[in-house]
Image 1 (cartoon, rainbow, N blue to C red):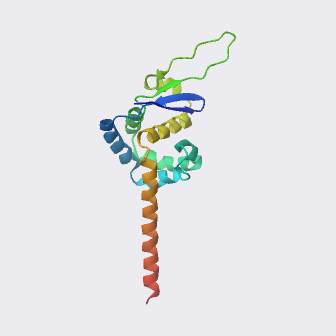
Image 2 (cartoon, helix red, strand yellow):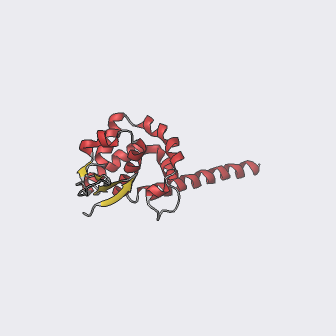
Image 3 (cartoon, rainbow, N blue to C red):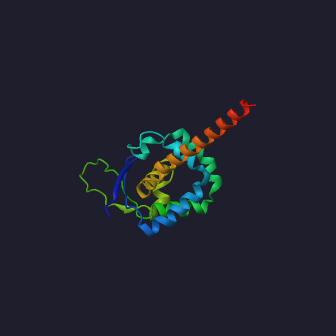
Length: 169
């Protein structure tokens, strides 16, 4: 399977989607943590669905959603989900201009050096995880948007029905 490449905050990451059998339990874990927060995540990525997920992110919505997300998942669950989503992730640091030419650094797996590489880069970590969701479940957020829209429409219809019922008397 061909790896997906993405440069996030100056570092190029490569990620191969998880296999079909791994995707099912990963999706289960993801949905069990997101749960009722699906509409919030759908709002996070509102906009032109043809644009990559990271270009649609609304930073203020991330910070609004974060307390609910953290309340639903333990640190161990968050770590497990992060490891599952980034199991194949490699990275390359940008070349530093030096007096002597250097060869590009070989890509290396991220998870074995996650603590070191992602230290002080929490927002970068969130961007990387959002991209991993997009790579692994390209239809996840579009489905979440549809589900949120359907719930909003149903709530609106119910409210309208109650309003019409109260004016009939």
